[in-house]
Length: 480
Image 1 (cartoon, rainbow, N blue to C red):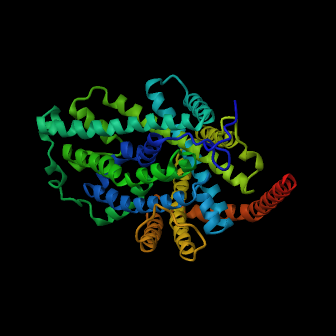
Image 2 (tube, rainbow, N blue to C red):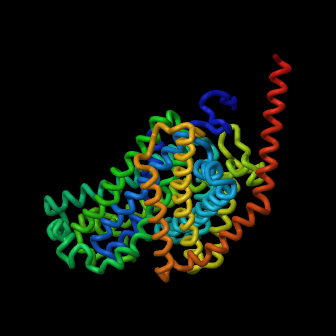
Image 3 (cartoon, one colour):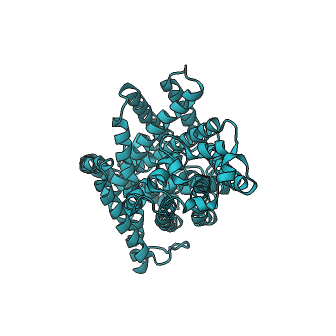
């Protein structure tokens, strides 16, 4: 295949193959996960109608984080995104921790999503072992990510479209059922159900406070748009529009669907063991609602795993180019994809699938929960980087971005305080406390990795880059 040595390549040789509709749907796919389709049932039962307010409250901070990321992306779109910004604005140690920490986070998430996808397929084909379907899906998603970045974007477009269709079917179908009295829920459903069963906060404000940590993790993945920025066409126009549409997405998909669910049923009718979407669609009269939602959640799992492979391949390339990972992980294929990074990440996800099948139980759930703290770290790094960037702009040391976050300093500090509170809430909740217990171990591993390998590798990479620039300069003078 001919090498596309033109403006369609990024500075580190990746293809700019993502277009407007890809980016918009990648943003939607990151913001909507299985937490809405499955986890909302437990949230509604434990918290009641106040869950709507928690999603809206947390959504405000998520939007600030994304605006901060958007400003950095327009300033310098780069492979590896916030891991590279951490290195530039906070220091090499933070770049190493953010890059490898985020890679590990999405590796473990990919393991969990693959295992869950195997369970969903097993519902239709119980005779096929779960490890077989997990392996087949991992091979398929890896192949997809190796073809071209446009193939990944196209798959995410359709994965996200399925989620959107499911949510819109609930909102439109549930509203129509109440207006026209369709199904048994159509006759009993009413907006009055939202406040007629114990009020908006039936289980107390403590439950509402503790729900913040559950909701914040439902949004994890929204920052993945940062990993796709460098490979996006016309990113100066596309990225701001995609990021600015986040409040609309949160309002329609999260708050809109919860309002309809709580209008159709009293909050106490929901439970952890059943998807509220299955309950609502079945009540409206949709046949095979369980199978439909099983398919939707399956595509959500595949989307998360594919996004993890995409993100991790780019992270390993960035770490390798900076000398913080073996140089071979930075190699790209003829289609301008970080193939070695994608294959390596897929290999680790496969190990996780085997471990989960060999040692079933709660241990894997604990590991996944610990990994989600990587999302909180990542969001904190993004806003911290923006604070440093703004100071450099004020001193004339960096070019200003055309997509600026208004009132950046107070809003970024508000986000940091909010993320600190979320961390404290993890310590209060006995079911989540073990995630904090693991953080010191995690910190020792990452800091030790930086001082044992990363710092030396980065120095060697800088020497290699300096030598290459000197040779280029000498060659240019000789030609002149």
